[in-house]
Image 1 (cartoon, helix red, strand yellow):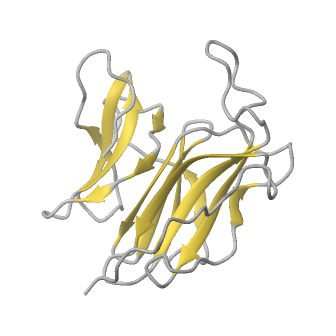
Image 2 (cartoon, rainbow, N blue to C red; image 1 turned 90 degrees about the horizontal axis):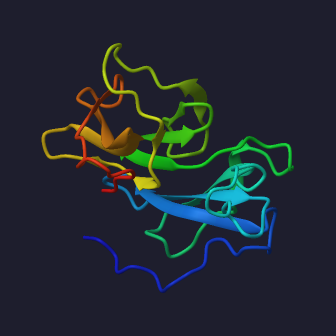
Image 3 (cartoon, rainbow, N blue to C red; image 1 turned 45 degrees about the horizontal axis):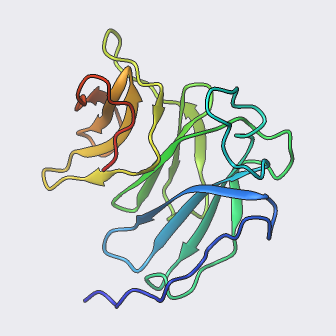
Length: 193
């Protein structure tokens, strides 16, 4: 059976490490194991987000951070930057989503379109980034939304995204190919699961 969740923990503290701000955390559990992958955007701007209506730079420059627990969250490994860097020359990024499909973890990050990363070893190493290939002629997603995706009981994988409104990235083949679907109501922007 599952262990009881650990007491509340702060996995990242703004200003205490490489970045003055950490924003938009998400956790992806590896099915059938005690492993949890915690992700967060590290940003170099203390306000963490651009003021409404202003340009995104330099607010969203930084790195994608990861911590791994192999004991249901009772303890965590050190934080490490898996994309971007701990310098102010890092990429401008905003919005990400992660989902575990079996032992493979898929990370989607909004950097010049949607970049796709895959780890086949529970986050120890990552392939990518590669631009997310999508079928021609359909809706074009601008970004994943913040958080995590899910694997449905029929095996389909659903990851929240932003098109010209809210939508979802869907895979019916364990993440080998993706399509856009699950459109939200007119005027919606960011979906979540």
